[in-house]
Image (cartoon, rainbow, N blue to C red):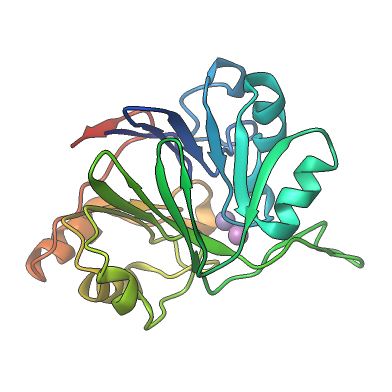
Length: 226
Ligand code: NI
Ligand code: MN
């Protein structure tokens, strides 16, 4: 399995049987190392209805014929606009051609046009993906929650964790999340995209190492193979 960081919360994952992209925020993402039109994928995982996660999901679905995997409301929203979508909800799992996806809870919000009339976009979630004999966990946007101890029982090979603070957990809570999840390796995400979520990834990795955890920071465009 090869995982490439596309900045913010976006990861490109190459499994034996399919190419996945999680939270495809490329257009308008100052960290994005590629353009949406350069991406070829088979499945698109969208954690919640905020622009910095839905991003290019619909256009990628149409352009690549890729299936969007998301919560039920988001899936219906994409399907109503001509996207291919598979709706799920937290706690549910499904066997896709590349492997098994489990939707997890996330403590966050999920809406579009968050002004006078926000559009409800279903519950925010995270994803546990089992493929090629590996288990990876993308938390989505979330604060720390105790159920991460349960999620950790799955035996996480790689966790993608937000450390940006303000909208999600920050470095201190992410360190506690590592205690709960005990992943073999964790990659920090959702930081340094904008000044409001500026964090020191290297410092987070150092603190994690002191606590006995392996954190690998990935610059946008960098990959990890395992
Ligand atoms: Ni969000
Ligand atoms: Mn976000």
